[in-house]
Length: 215
Image 1 (cartoon, rainbow, N blue to C red):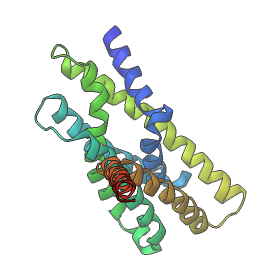
Image 2 (image 1 turned 180 degrees about the vertical axis):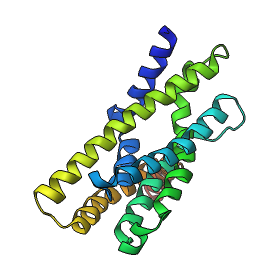
Image 3 (image 1 turned 180 degrees about the horizontal axis):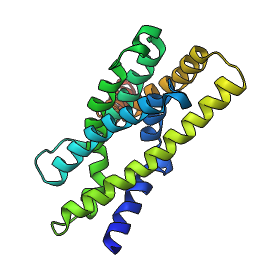
């Protein structure tokens, strides 16, 4: 029971920390289009995301897949950006479909987020009790995500139904803000970004030294 509590709390802490704000932004972007009365759709959406990240988290924990962590960290903000763009271009007919595109986004992008979740879990995990620990960790993540969903729905209720801001304005405005943040994160995390600047700096220094020699 002590192990279960530890890994459950670890899952919560993995989401509700400043370092995990990219995951928070993704869940926020997923839920921005929904209000209280859409709670059934939100349940389906969160379930799709859960299936996706649980699958890759389990496969990583069982050593079936190995992916470069740098690329995963780069892809996370791109999943946020894609979700925001989908929010900004969606039409009413899309919202009325039985299976909106956002559900597939949640499932597919959940696969990517699961690989990111695996990092902290695998850093502590041994072979003993793997399945139980994995379950507890996943449940902790879900508890944290549900809290984020609740906050987003409350905020949407406040803005749209109490402050009377048009729903589409709220959706597109909030999505645009998150889109800008996610693109900045992607720029920062591009795997070759640091190397590129290092090489540029070396080139500048080399050019400077050559000039000083020729003067």
